[in-house]
Structure formats: structure tokens, C-alpha cells
Length: 471
Image (tube, rainbow, N blue to C red; front, side):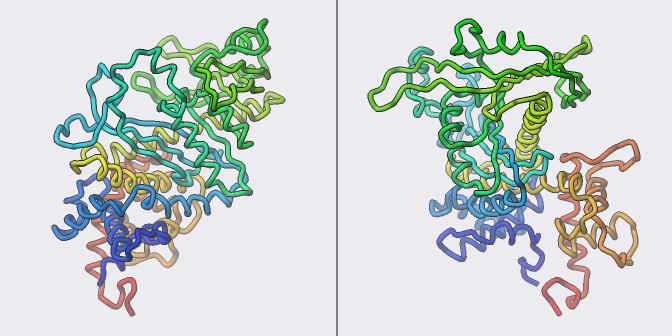
């Protein structure tokens, strides 16, 4: 039996268009993807089946021919295919810090967070595509880099006066451009970002590319109309158009809850911010935008009241339009959970590869694996009645069924996605009681690892004639 016969089908499909310039490198990356996806929380040594496979993985991540762009490219192709099935897709942008401070011998890292924190690591900027209903389609764009030490001595004024192309905030503009380059022609894409994406040049570029953008406001921008003055005061003075219930995710000291928010909106024109004059650039234009204020009413005393000030170039004509934009922004939490899966489920900050370039290749591959774990959770919520073969190989679902039901006889009908996901979650500690709701991503990734061990034993125990690829 070859390794490919036991490999999860999704790896072979997802990396079908992989082109590293050498068929042997292509096969090696797929094998490593299989091993890491089988044991996502394990180290490279633990995930690989033997020392030869571990050495092959180290050589691959050290190979300059294997770039992050080449690793991500086949997944981008598959993501585009999935996007084509939807009329509207949200491209959620966000940035996270990958902390390797406790790896002092790792070269090529840079400072992260504030200079005072004295932390070192890498910065990851990701575009995760989801449907408005929350189905995660894939990672469409991603950049991972080390922050330069050169800017440490610059004052705030000097940093502010730098050209936008020399600032980290330019990553948001580049992500938008890459998203629109890759987006399918017949799919409308709306870029969604949190306060870090409140970059005026991002709005200008979105207008130039004729694409939608929706961002939570970080700075109270000046308006072209001097009487209105500032953005927040402008929308605060607008009448309340209606009320909507919003599910607020759990925070560190606050439980998940339902919040009733008052919704106001209005159209306005933003005055372009000051930028250093440049003979090579035209001045920034004024922009017509719509602003939405979602403000919680009668919030409990022990929580921080919800308040979202959203800026968009997608016209808001009525209360229903405003509510739809709020629902789009609520999808932004998916990328935070994605980063959680990367850090906790895939254990990326525990990786001991000793150069930044190796880590960047490793992080790119792990991002695809994290998306897959994330996708399984949402597939259960969007397509629960599909056959579980949409996400599991034959030997995986059979081993899962036998383990959960403690029987040797298999069912005549393939279980559904919902049944299989709940069984996987049970392996990860999910109790599956009536009041427990649907399982979350944490129990899924724990159960997934147990399933892979069980499925391997199940596969080995079967007669050769019954194994995949035989007969």
C-alpha cells in the first residue's frame, strides 16, 4: 500500500495544480501536507511518519525554489472555483502577529506589536473569502514578512510623513489589488476590514477598481462639508432607522450575548487627509461614502456596549441595506477564528524551523490546512445533509462509524456531513447533548487528529483487497 492510497483526498485535489518546477518536489509537498493535516497540532517530527520523511520536510521548507506564492497558488485556484458558485463573496482582510520571541536562535525575525513589548516574530496579512452566510471558501491572498528594524528610531512625525508605499498600511491596498486580480469576473467581491483597514488610499483604490469595500472606522474623519465637520457627529445626528438583534461573540471577560442595536445611516463626502506633496502623484480625491452607526441600547452593566461605525462605498438607501452591511461586517469574526485555528489548532508558534524564510513557507502550508479544518465546521452548518464523502475518504468515515458505534458492521447508507462532524467532535470531547448545539472548531481539530490515528489502524487491519486503490 502506498502513502497516496491512505492520503486524505482533499490534499490531492487542493494541490492538483501545484507547480514547484519539479514533480518530485510536488509529490513531497503533497505528502507533507497529508502528514501535517493528519496531525495539525503536532510538530513536524511527530506529524511525519519517520525520520526520512522529517528530513524531507526540512529540506522542502529550506528549498528556495519552493516559495510561499507557489505553495498558495493551487489553493488560490481552488478558492476561485468555489467563489464562482456564488454571486457575492466577502473578502475579509486582517493582520496577525506570529510570536517567536522564545526562539532567539531563529534568524530573520523582526519586532512585532509595539517597540516597548520587545517581542519578535513575523507579521501575517491574510484575505479569507467567505459567503455572506459564513461558508469559508479559502485564502485568496496572503503576505508574511518580518518588520524592519530600520524604522525604530523614527519619530511619529517622520513615520506619518512617509509615502504610503513605505508604510505597513500599504499592505491593505496591495491585498485589495491582489484580491481583485484573482476574483472571478462574474462574482461580486466586497472587501471587509476592521479598524486596521481604515486607510484612505484603500477607499480610493476601491473606487478606481470599481469594487465594494466595508470597513470599521478607526479615526473620526473630516468631512468635505465644513458644517458637518466630523464623521461620528454626522451620523450621530441622523435619525434612528430601526433596531436589529446582533449576536456578540464571547470576549475574555464577557460571555456571548444578543445585543439590541439602534441603526442610523447617512451619505456623506470625505475630505481627503493631508499627505506630503509629491510631483509623481496626484492629490487624493474627495470620496462619496455611506456611513452606518450600530449602537447598542440598554446594554448590561457588566459588558462593553457594542458600537460599530462602518464606512462603505456600497450605497445604503434604506434600513434593510444598512442591516445587510452590518451582517457583512459580522462575518469578519471568521478570520479571527481562522487565526485561532492556525495558532492553537496548528500550533504554528511552536514551530522550531530556524530561519524566517523556512517559517514563511511552513506558515503558508499551515494556512491551507487551517482553512480545511475551519471549512469542515461550516460545511456542517451549511450542507448538513450531504454525504460525508464530501469531506472524508471511504476508510475515514468507516473507521469513524465503527469507533463511535462500537460495532464491526458498516451501514448500508453513507452517513451525512452532520452526523460525521458530530462524531468527529465527540472524539474531541464534544458531548453531543441536545442542548449543546453544533460543535465548534476546537473540538473538531482535536477529534480530527484522533480520527486520523483510528483511520490508519482501520486501514491497516483491512484485507488488502478491501483497501483503497486495490482490487
